[in-house]
Image 1 (cartoon, rainbow, N blue to C red):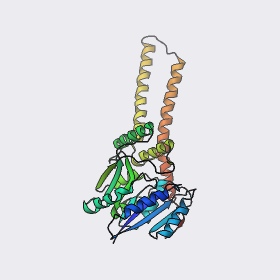
Image 2: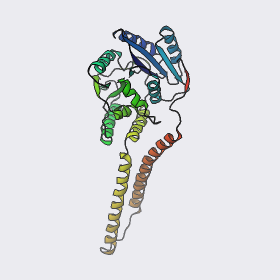
Image 3: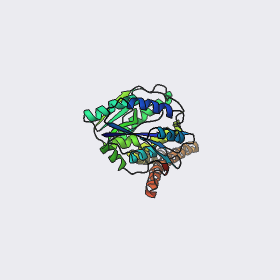
Length: 310
């Protein structure tokens, strides 16, 4: 018997959960009889009836397991908890909003088992239904981060990944507190095939990702996998030192040779404001890296479990 663990992070998904479970159950029936399923729901401190619905489903299906956090720790913590507690020979991650189509699950399984791939990832080929500005910044983010890192992060990649146990164990071994799963999946490498599909809207409920949260998440990804911002900060500082030195020479030349005294406090104020802005910008970059180091050094747990059924 082969076991597949399906990890489902959940945060306030009471509207989508019944629809998701119905669709997943329908597609599980297409698998060979020798394949066993384990469905692991990770309740990320939901404030609605998500946990109650999971418990109701567990009473009907004993292959369902659940973990409930003491509070909301974020999706990254829920993903890590799922990977750490999954017992399957193969593991996949799925969102409960059905934006990760369960209909691809069988093809992902066959690709890994028959075509000698270690993992199968999914990516959206379009962003239909998303705000235009959000889609634009998402594309720019992937272009930027791929120039900063030594490995490729695929544009449109979802967390919907089907993996062999060896890939899961490699990701679990990365115990860092500040987690960016898309980067971690790319970092560990292995032989991956990408399946493409058109964007699917949420089946119910509302997205938990605001533009601000996505921007913050993008910055976490950049600082987690690249030190390029620190290099850029150093280059800008060096550039301004050179420009300042040249301007000093120009002022000396105009004053002593041409007899043109320096004047104009508005221009001086503008320069001071600009240089101060550059300094604060550079300090902000350094502060981001220091804050990540600070959080890592404290070695706090990535998540805290309030209850589970295994």
